[in-house]
Amino acid sequence: MKKGEWRFDTKAVHGGNRPEEYLGASQVPVFQAAAHRYGTAEELNEIFAGKKPAYIYQRMHNPTSRVLEQRIAELEGGKKALVFSSGMAAISNVLLALTRAGDELVCGNSLFMTTYIFLARVLPRYGVTVRMAETDDPANFADLINERTRLIYLETIGNPRMDVPDLPAICKLAHKQGAPVAVDNTLATPYLLRPIAAGADIVIHSTTKFFNGHGSAVGGAAVDAGKFNWNSRRFPDFADAVKRAGRLAFSDKLWREYLIVLGGFQAPWHSYLTLLGLETLGLRMARHVENAAKLAQFLEAHPKVKWVNYPGLDSSPYHRMAKKLFGGKGYGGLLTFGLKNQAQCFKLIRSLRLCYQLANLGDAKTLVIHPYSTQYVSFPEPERQQLGIKPEMIRVSVGIEAGEDILEDFEQALKRI
Ligand SMILES: *Cc1c(COP(=O)(O)O)cnc(C)c1O
Image (cartoon, rainbow, N blue to C red):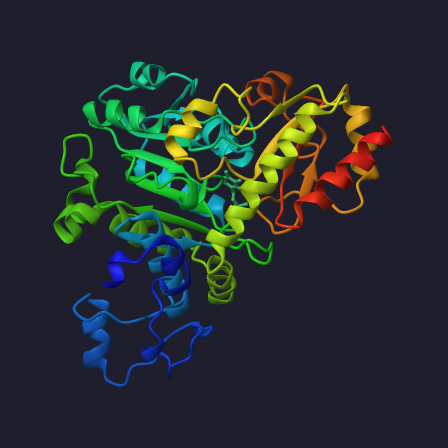
């Protein structure tokens, strides 16, 4: 079997690995070096001129991080990936690379909090018009696209609204109007959904979450599908990149003019930890979705729980779409649920013994947080409402512990509220 034909779990273990290049070591070494040495001036001249591929400086690339880039590109079915110092570095670099003053961008209205801050508050300061579409109907996106629209941006599973937009339909409508689509696939991971196969042009990850899987390193990635035609009137500023890299013009530009310039490359030690985590992505996701489904059903049946929002439940308005897009492999590891009020949420969190209260997700450990009083504490009320942040809501990132232990922890804590 050829490398390119490996199945998901095999790519997760072996993707990008080249032991022959590092003394046969089965794990990629941490190339902890700021720069690489070359003997002759002629050689370094060739390298800088792009005539000879080689490593120069850690702000640009690094052998450890390169393995991670290749593995993520393979898992997502993309042509090239770049890794960043955080998910937000990946997101902000991608959005900056695609928009100039006077340009427009259409994004879904269900967004990760910091992404929302970048789109609603920061990007408009640079003269970019950001239009937000309600994600439930693809036509809402199409209505907002015009000849100035340079990007459609959305999350494959919205955090924390848990909405699942009709990605194939949105991609089709966007492409018909000549605009590329970038998605944040952090919550679904390529285990559930490979957005490029569904039509997306750019896939972004916070590798901090399920990719790393153990809460040991912050990181991000952007994957270029290598399919979009950037040689168009909408992207005159991509002409040089198109000459250099053709259909990979986007990742070429992103690397040269944003990643290197803004300085948010992923450090090798972080890449190493994330590579280690990725090896078990398939195994972990299978347990995450199994435990999340069990907890969602348990909570939905509990008299003290008012509602549960999880795309795996029949009661979710996104169940049918999630079933179609995720092909029965499950519905993710994140869920939200409602109690009577904020005071009950605080009591419940205080009573949990196994679950950790912290601001992260996709960890092997089960994590809970009360978003309204933490991440969103300084958000104006209308924005909290738009993003689905309610005072009576708890968010759970369901871990890979024994499912029964997670249920028992919630059961004993619910008794105490
Ligand atoms: C956490 C998260 C991010 C941001 O990633 P960082 O690694 O924390 O910068 C972006 N999108 C989603 C969906 C996330 O959950």
